[in-house]
Image (cartoon, rainbow, N blue to C red; front, side, top):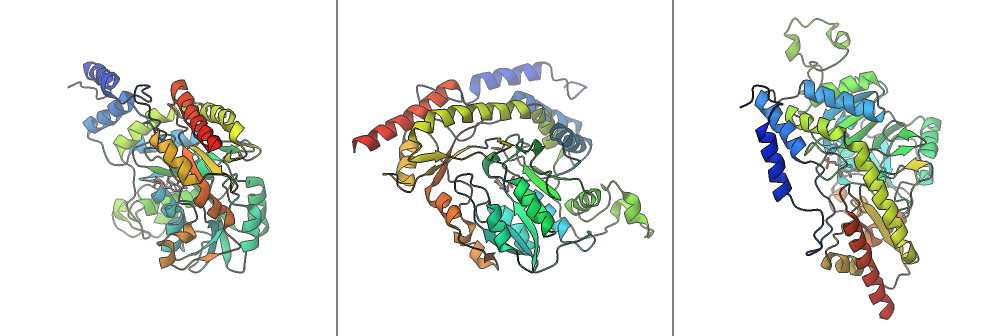
Length: 428
Ligand SMILES: Cc1ncc(COP(=O)(O)O)c(C=O)c1O
């Protein structure tokens, strides 16, 4: 075994050879399949992860800190607090915002406006922390929350707004930040599917008080499972560090704030609040650090693929609309979402069946309209206005692959399958 756990020599060569011989190809013309996702990691990440295991330093430590700092400096955030999933990142944001030790904290019964068209774990932490979600509508073309819908939902109990840029498409942050400023609302950004996206040259997640990202396997970069919260608010970042780890102060940056009343007890085991254990591990962070260097390249590949698909599918525009990019934004294309027009002579299920039967994998666009899910209806929530846009996406939306590894063959094959479908539609 090498003395230096980062110097694997022959092991690394063997791993690379193994990967070259055994890893699943992105696209095999003999058995054409275009999966929604392809792993973003390879032998380099596996070696980084294994190397960290060999050091036996496995629980949260310097690698996790390096990943947080690297993520913030690469993308332009001030403080990063990693955790074990995008869902945990959302929980941690809401936990820190609802604790009495946080300035201007949200109180039980306060209302949080968010789009009905989102993922379940945008919603659950709002409910779990005693707040009342108010679901509002989205534009079915951008698939993002409509600023007018937010404005109309504001009432005496409204304290916060959560934005969710869908599939890497930034929300209209100009209008939304103006509304939040005017009504003194806390802005929370669930950017779990939008790493690398910007609005007006600024990264999503940096417009509000706090934002979240996911490092799940299928996302822009991965630590297998994982997530990170970002904020410019140092106290809030420390509160998330406390609540991420049992409620102790071990990881806070500003210890003085918490040690002013001397407990006379071991500082490492001093608990100053309630908390969870939602930490990331060192091997995951070691892998994440390798992934971080690849993020910009992955996003650029996704953008190129989207440009290809947008062009290739534009001829079907009267029946099938690709997601419309928000003006003044850069899109990071988590996937390629589409909406079947109401007047189309085929249904969403018909086109998806055809695509799937021909090896082009499809999926729904996140959860569609959350108000229609049985789980949501177990809890106290409100809606405001119609949810027609979210319904349209739930009933007529779907997504195909736009991942970093799509080859020219794969893209060509996808467009061929779409063309065959439309030929069939025309001839019937
Ligand atoms: C908008 C949104 N929020 C939260 C999550 C949860 O992230 P994770 O799967 O890492 O828990 C997802 C997952 O894709 C998501 O799309």
